[in-house]
Image (cartoon, rainbow, N blue to C red; front, side, top):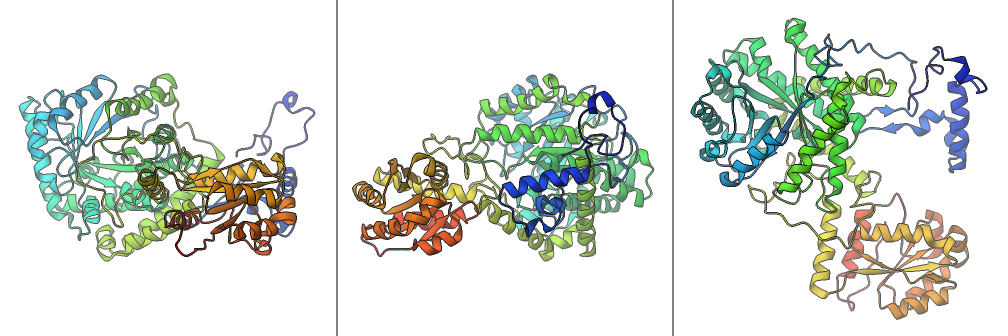
Length: 639
């Protein structure tokens, strides 16, 4: 939240401010404290300032304040086109053409890939990002796939992993066959020995790749060579600062390897492209892209390069980790927010992941939506016509500073471990990323980090999308595979759906809605939403005035799990009697929805479901009960 110039101590038009009290931090604290009291925050908690109560702790260890003003003053971000390049490398920004719209392809069949590449280019894409090898088209077929691409106009970026040499030779041969002179090659080999080794569980050694790349670079001044890939960390569940620090460490390692292979320092800098993820946390993305330029500037300044040679080519790709298989059309919204953030943050090129990519190979409709998402932001929203749109925002400048500091600290820690290759080989990077992943996974399980359409507002009646499987077999598992945030909840949904298919009946829990409608509506809706996140239906018969009525309705339903839903007042009067009566009527499990812990302890119920419970654990226990034979020994579940 930013406040006006008046709150910051500047001047305002007195006609606009007339009749209003002065907007001061003290006045804000009074209003915020009053609102917190009304929401149930205790006076003991309010002993600290409202800023402390409302601060958000990040996975990087710093707090995001709820109020941002000009005090304390932030570090000067400079001007667009000048060091430290937080605000970009061009004084005029990207107003002439926007960013490069880069389309990603993983199709293994060159006959399918060829028309799709052409379709992307004639419908807005400016460059192509092609997977080659086991995860995409065979290297021997790359030339066939590129037959309709004007390689003198449309750069191609490769993603070939360990097969980088075969892929690079095939790409350069395709340029030669198309009549593109070596001096006109503008494509990128996409070599990244560090991320490749990390994903394969091997010890990185960039020396061989650097020598090969240096050989390819001779006579081709526009050929890109290496990628400094921070998405490795993001996709494994790491934090934004870990991603930034890893990308800078990768870039530094690539510089060392390429210069050792014979390239000049400035030449090596030009041939490295940085790749970062963009997810739905738009401000973190904006600040991260601004911070990484300043971090790279500091590295290159230490190398002795003049400001005009301290550039960074930045490719942002919308997060694969945030995509869902369930309710996948919501991924369109996530990708739009992420693409917006990437554009505002100053990415040079952006790839929007098609909304169905978590299901399998994207279809043509999903690819079209991915392209048009970017085209709309550039052409209709005119997003690129503003130079550094976030510049000057107290919040964004503060977050940029904090991410810079945290990212730089992680970069220094990586360098102290012997560099990124050593950090990967010794397991240091894996351990640090896993620490964050476990915290992130717990936040998702407890629904502190909600996933729309999955952990919140799931659609039990959705028809799952069907897509051909992506090449390379099932997704790899391990520290540096893609850990999609929705996977735990989606596994529960899959399990419930299998049970539904086998028996013809979806696992169902009975909602014992005690008292008048106004007393139970909110908690019954909460309980139904929570159950649906695990693929469990809610039988909601309507208000039940007494425990006896609840027992009669439960007995008639034939269900095995009962969830009491009502207000605290009704719970205090009826919860204990209702729980005992439901157990006597054969309920294997009785849960209390949304109640304080003290209420459920006194009521004699088996467990409770509330906003802060471990939903994954609770739903797992419920499915264990609901998918076993009814004659099995009664089980108990608790949050």
